[in-house]
Length: 211
Ligand SMILES: [Mg+2]
Image (cartoon, rainbow, N blue to C red; front, top):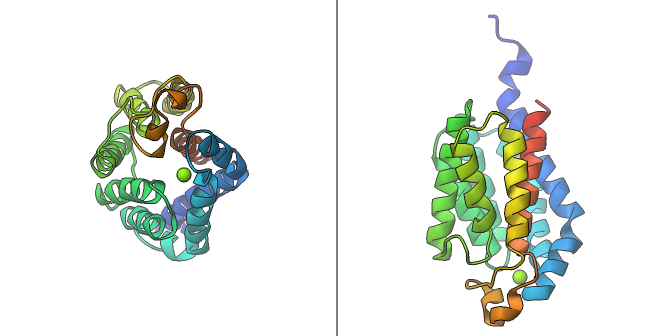
């Protein structure tokens, strides 16, 4: 056998690293996410996301033992069960759909994009929404499109596009979710779900970069 133990464990290690990185960034930005949600919603997005990823982190070993696609699905179902508000079902649907796009961890940008497209479609369906409504889709869709173009530096492209797309939610008037009740008054604030999506994309990029 020429397979090194580290190669055998690489799938598990990837999932463990992804869960750890996303959990860390959500906890680190918990108050900021609540503050963003306070401005245009009900101030609970940070707490909701933290509760969800605490549950995911607590089950990290169990999840990491699964094949990559099944691991994403398990993270998704955990978020649906643990995260209150709209973000649980939305992030949960995204991860379940991304997980169903294939059993093995992606080995190419094309495979990453396929999972992102599945996730975006699931969020659109679950939220009955699309770009321009001041939601997480306003980050997820531009990042997916930018990566689909096959950029020379996918990590820099993902990070840069996510940051620009997040900022672009600030002047938007919300037409979906609780913020839609504010109408024009929702303009002038970043969307909390767009911010959590950007944080997650950044964390995933950090993990990929470190490998
Ligand atoms: Mg909320």
